[in-house]
Length: 339
Image (cartoon, rainbow, N blue to C red; front, side, top):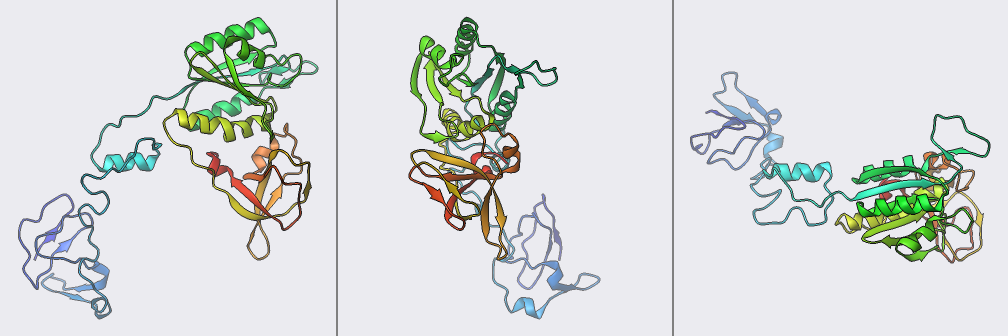
């Protein structure tokens, strides 16, 4: 007897025994309580009658193909909690409730620097004993993916006074400083001493591999995390220590990373006492069961291992060996915020 279109209200009640053609998204007219898909109906050419397929009527239930008011979000309910990171789906949910603005926490301001006389920017000719700098590019990419406002401090040479001046100035207008290199025990490892002179050190060195010489401290109100210089150690330290710290600073409660129990497709013997993360890639055996295989080298300088791996195998402190087929914990990079 009529047609109900999306965005328009059908003005008349529908009597019992009558039908109205209705488009997806239209408001249900007064009277009907069920919508039957058009492909399950036979409609007269002049639309004076409609016949429902018998196989459809046998399983038809009142309320089918109707979206009830409030079935997604009910009035008065909280649909976005404090501390929730705003992904595209959260923004869409807020827009679907008619909101135009959300109150958010300010982006953390992060300063990033690499240290070392051996470092040179890509694109220049390297003198003997020099290497191309890569750690800042890794950290800046990870930080921007996390939603931070990043300042690139560049390469800091092994000069105590210059290092002190740069860290002091950066700490004055940033929330967190991230450095790579200069936190071990060498004569040119100046970052740890600079932090101690300008502020205080909370801890230095952890029982982990890679990433043992991680340093954490504070300069005034600015937190500072000194990461090792090897690229793999930088990424592992960021994902497992810096990222949770930054998420907490951003107002969200970091979740424990997802772990899968999978079979090892490798053998390892090691000295217990440290938690260790091995770069790994999941494969499927002949019965489609997941196996964790390792990159051919676990050197902390092997950047290629980070592009090959899709996750990490975590060995606990008391683990002395792993044999092929043993169950191990696998952490996908996706659970650590890296696709």
